[in-house]
Length: 241
Image (cartoon, rainbow, N blue to C red; front, side, top):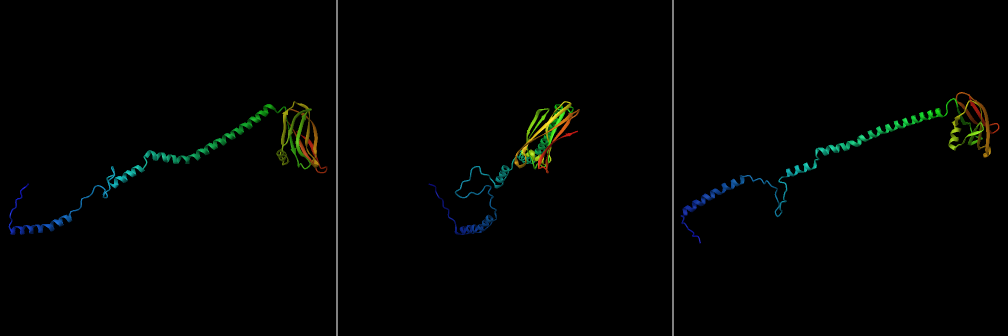
């Protein structure tokens, strides 16, 4: 047990010591009030709440981290811009392809026409060619169904007309009914016309022509006309000299 040593102080000494202490107290209070508080480097944590491990030290650090995560890398931004620009270029490429396709179609049509002309020249030379055409006028007294052609007593064609073709003939169209070859000399053509005559009755009439085939192409026309005075159709064959 420690020993306490008591010293006897005189009354005047105690009074002097108390006076010094009382004089020092106001000076200490002023010094404490003037000193600034220490800055807290960390975020304040509410009482009873533990700080999350690995939390950022300052809000500025958190903001910098979020900005870096939100902004894409330069390569990704370039790829996105290219993907947006690609659809704008697509219509131009499509128009170019369409123009090329149309050009190819026109070339095919021209080539087909040239081949058709060449085929006719090879199969039907001008020195042996004969062509027969058919035309109609008005058509009030005769509705055409079919035409049969015979050259030198040999049937060369029997053509059945559709309503659309008959309508085109009534509007002024001309139909090439037959194209063939004939040698130079005398020939005979016979045409038989079948259809509906006056009063919707079945009607069949014929027409014949004798012609000379010379050097060069020969053209014949079958014409169907209405005779108003007789109210009957008229069939004739015209030789184009």
